[in-house]
Length: 111
Image 1 (tube, rainbow, N blue to C red):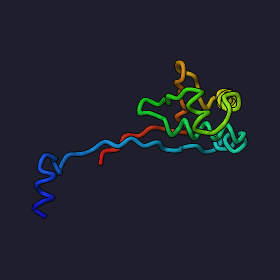
Image 2 (cartoon, rainbow, N blue to C red):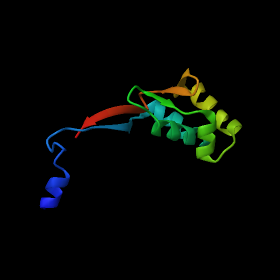
Image 3 (cartoon, helix red, strand yellow):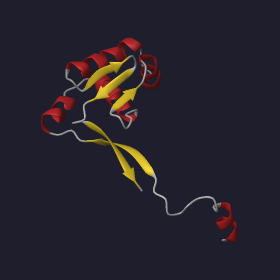
Image 4 (tube, one colour):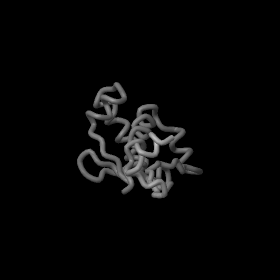
């Protein structure tokens, strides 16, 4: 016990920590659209949702997505184009995508 107290003496036990999580909030029309999407579009959407930051956009290059999904860049690009067609993502800048907040929403929790 004494060793634990000395080891953690620089940490305030009463401070709050902020945790970033992504919440899936699709319902109704958006859920029906997601259910009809191709497997590559769903895989890309999940990958981007995993990269979603607190500002509501995800950063990932075509090469990063393709490498992570073990797919070709043209296959991943097909998924990105499908997501864009149905307004689930919108390009912000190069390798940055806004995600539709009605489907995936960033949340900051204090614990």
